[in-house]
Image (cartoon, rainbow, N blue to C red; front, side):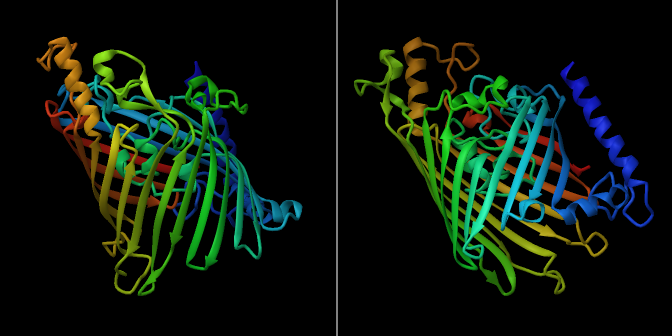
Amino acid sequence: MEHRKRNRLLGSFIALAVAGGVGSAQAAEAFSTESRWMSGDWGGTRTELLDRGYDFSLDYVGEVAGNLHGGFNDDRTARYSDQFALGMHLDLQKILGWQNAEFKLAITERSGRNLSNDRISDPRAGHFSSVQEVWGRGQTWRLTQLWVKQKYLDGALDVKFGRFGPGEEFNSFPCDFQNLAFCGSQVGNWVGGIWYNWPVSQWALRVRYDLTPAFAVQVGAFEQNPSNLETGNGFKLSGSGTKGAILPVEAIWTPSLNGLPGEYRLGYYYSTARADDVYDDVDGQPQALTGNASKSHDSKHGWWVVAQQQVTAHNGDADRGLSLFANFTVHDKATNVVDNYQQVGMVYKGAFDARPKDDIGFGIARIHVNDDVARRAELLNAQSGIGDYDNPGFVPVQRTEYNAELYYGFHVTNWLTVRPNLQYIKRPGGVDEVDNALVAGLKIQSSF
């Protein structure tokens, strides 16, 4: 029933958009390859609205994944997940005369199933990454953005307040890959119990100051409220259930190397909420053996480095060429399952003259599990006397997981990109007994 209502809503939206888009020969028509939007320019209305400060959007991401070889269950199948994002961005200076101010609203809906859950990984351990990044955080409707941003001091001071996720501003990274280990804020992927990535939002404040045109610093405060993760709380605005706050700080450097852009981020986060120890109980003994309550810590912390740099221009065209990237995160060993993560890769845009807007991407990621997590699993198995991995009572021992992805992005039109990809997962969930997996994927990104 929910999916039928969603489809009727989207169908009505698209039908209206298309009807407006074919009304004028002067504006981009619906399905024009040169238009920014599939529904066209609504007879010129859309451009007029943009000029007046109103930007309405409906974006779509769909991801298909099929297991070609290996994994926990090698019965071949394919799974599909998707996300719709309905948004409104307002230039408040044009609309209300509010100098250097803007407003953003976004509502998202996710649906579908994830191949990682039972085909790639052992369900007892899970897959640390995911072969379909768009799946997760409840397949439901959510208020993902509701914020106001104001600039002061000729734009040097930037203040943003409302509901949004920390990965929108801190430890930010693009999301063109389909594997989660190469998509979005990686801190949120490995400390997801406190750092909530898109599409979850929470009350937040971010203050940024540009010291120079190429160097900025920013600090933030984000509500840490686990109830925001619950499926029925997608539009919750109250602070009930709040456990503490996440306080990130970050330095951002955006140099130009031989005229080519780069971005480098160095940051640190501190959580004020209490967190359970992954190994010790309240008396400092192995909790797996005593069964007592876990030792409680009064905080949680970690840091990150993100580097992105274009290093070549294709035949002198700076819009094309090779870019390199790297991500590193380190987390609190006492309280976090993943204690460190590394990722490196490249993207080449416009490798072929006949396809100047296409891109090729390749990345490799390593996700390391806290040694205390493996020790805990070994103690539980020793205590139960279960040493056979195939026994349902066996607790899988997790160590290190590796992910790799190669994609080719077809820029079909200005409103549609299709990225077929191949993914390889070594030791899914960090479990030695699970076979390495080869996955074929397809990611579709479109703007209506």
